[in-house]
Length: 437
Image 1 (cartoon, rainbow, N blue to C red):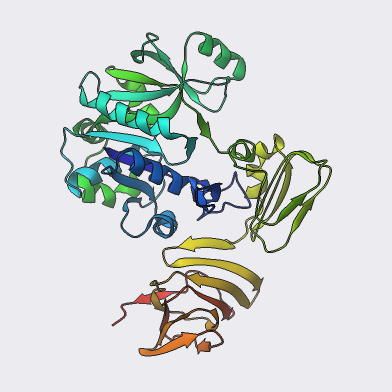
Image 2: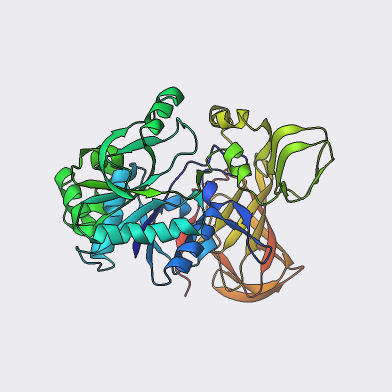
C-alpha cells in the first residue's frame, strides 16, 4: 500500500500542550501495552505497519514539523516537505509527484491519502487496505471513505451516496451544514467526509498538471510558494464525475478539541494529578513537575505545560483559539530530531533551557553572533566539540562558548544539560551551521 499521511495543524486548539512546532498529532496521550505513552502520529504509523508491514508510508508536512517527526518515528521515515502552507490540493499534488519522481512509484499504482490525526481502531486500517483495493479496480478515478455519522456534526462535510451498498456512486457533496440541516441529510443516508480517499497515481498527476504548469517534482517544489491555496475537495473531489464512496462503520473521531480528546483518553489523568471523590468527568494532563489538585469539579479539563495552564469547562474549551491568538508567546517546549528542549526561564538578556539529547544524537555544529552560551551537564556522558577541539563530558562539567564560537555536543548515553544563553539579541535566527569535520 502506498499511503500519504497529511500532517498539518497550527497547534492552537489544544493549547497549552500544542504550539507552533508541536501540533496535536505529536502530543503523547495514548497508553501502549507496555505502559508508555504515544502520540497520534506514532499510533497511526504503528497501526499501518501492523496492517501492512510493507506499506510505503510518506508523510506530507511543513518544515517546522520535520524534527518532531524524526524524533518520534526515527530518521528513516519518508517525508515530503511543503515549503509553506498551501492547503490540501497542492500538498497532495506535491506528495504524489514525490512518490512518482523520487520513490519511483508507477503511474498505475493506487495511492491512499488520509489525515494523520483521527482517533481510530484496527478496523480503520483494514478499511484503508480495502480502499486501496477498490481504487485498483478502475471503476472510478476517486474512491472516498465515507464515515457513518454518530451525530449531526457541523464540523464536517457530507457525502450523499446513490445507494446503501458498501461501495456506491456519489449523488452529491454537502459543505459543513448547520446541525439541523445535517440531521436531515443523515436521514437520507449521508456520510461524513473525513478527508480519506484513494486514486491511481497518474490520475492525480494529470489533475495537478491541469491546474499547474510544472515539469516533475523538483520543479513543482521550486514554485510551491507561488501556488494558489485550495482544498482537495474544491479542486478535484467535488468536480469528479467518476467517483465512489466506500462506507466505514467503525469508530472515528477528530480529536481537535479538548472535549473530544479527553473522550479518547485511557484514564482521567496523565502526569502528577490528584482528584478528590467529588470530581465528576474531570480530566487532567500535567507535563509540569508540580502537582495539580482538583476538588469538587464537574465536566472540566485541566492541562498544564511550560507554555501555560488551562482550566476550562469541556464544552467551552472548543472556543479556545481566539484567546490563544492573543497570547503571542514563544515556544517553551519542542521535540527535535536529536531530543527535546524546555525553556525554564526567559529574561530580556538571558534564556535558560533544559536540553535532553537522545543517545547517539548530536546538535548541529553551529555558532551564534550575538550571544554567549554556557552548558552545565546534569546527567549522562558524551563528547563536545568547541572550535574543532573535542573533549569528553559528563555530569558536573561546565562548558562556556563565547559569541562566534563553533560548538556541538554528542550524546553517548541520554545526556541532559542546562543551557544558559546570554546576550542582548537572543533569537532563533541567530544561528549559523557548519559541517563537522
